[in-house]
Structures are given as C-alpha cells and as structure tokens.
Length: 200
Image 1 (cartoon, rainbow, N blue to C red):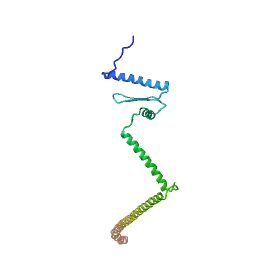
Image 2 (image 1 turned 90 degrees about the vertical axis):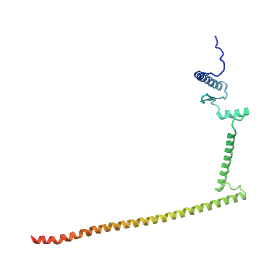
Image 3 (image 1 turned 180 degrees about the horizontal axis):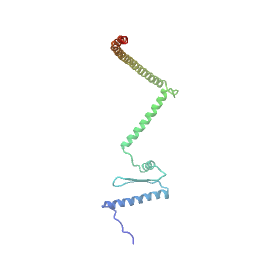
Image 4 (image 1 turned 90 degrees about the horizontal axis):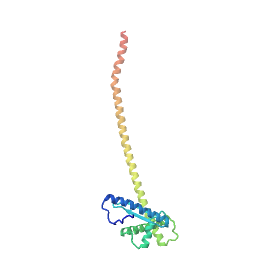
C-alpha cells in the first residue's frame, strides 16, 4: 500500500515544520553530492532556514566564484547591485592609480627614465627640486630645535650646579658651626687637667 500524496503548503506546527525542513534539506544535499559524483556536474546549493541559518554545498572541483560567474554569464542576470559595481570600479581606479604612482616612484629614483620625453624629465626634475627644498627646510627646523634643546639643557645644568653649590656651602657652614660650638668645651677641659695633676 503506497503513501498518500502530501499537499504542498506551509506546515503550521513549528516542530513538524522544523523536522520536515531538516529531513528534506539533508535529502537535497545528498542529491547534490550524488549529482556531482555520478554526472561530474558542478553543483552549488545554498539554503537559508526560516531562522536565517545557512546551509551550503559546492562541488569540490569548482569555487563559488567560478559557479556564480558562469551563472552570470549564461543567465544574463545582474548578480551585483550598483553599490558593488561602484566599489569594483573604484577598486580598478585605485589599482591604476597605484600602478602610476609606482612608475612615478621608479622615475624619481632614476629608474626607467631613458624612454621619457623632455617635458616628463623636466617635471621629474621640478618634483625633485621641490622635494629637496622641503627636506632642507625640515633639516633646518630639526637643527634649530636641537640647538634650542641644547641651550635648555645647559641652562638646566647651570641651575642644578648652582643648587648643588649652595647645598655644599650650607653643609660646610653647618660643619663649621658644630666645630666652633665644641671648641670652648675643649679649651675648658685642657687647663683644668694640669691643675688636677698638681693637686695630687
């Protein structure tokens, strides 16, 4: 006795819907793998569940980019919107600009200049002159800053030496005061000692 035909409509019960999704997804993934192996087909399968979870399969012999490029070519449909197209054009522009800058940098280094015209050489010479002027100006600025720092260090050194000198003088004064305060006691003790000996 065969199974009855199932009406294809949305399953209302969420649990039943999830179970059916899981089973049928696994079944279609299995069929995609079989198509790849049995028929040497290039298959790409992307499935999004109602919760947004993605499942995918791609034939090992092809990349997703290759498959999408083929789809774009044979279907004639635009896969990328205007924003992606703008970004692609912008990327191409930046690559060209980078290539030009690399060539210009080589010319500034003196490489590959044999094929340049007089005007191009004059432009490079002017750029080098401007660069040299800026480098010299920066060098002078750094030199002035170093001289200023040197003067500041000298002033700070003088100030510290002055403070050290003052502290040494203050310490010398304290030592002299201590020495003078002990002197009268010494002179008092010495005259008494001979008298004590005479009394004996």
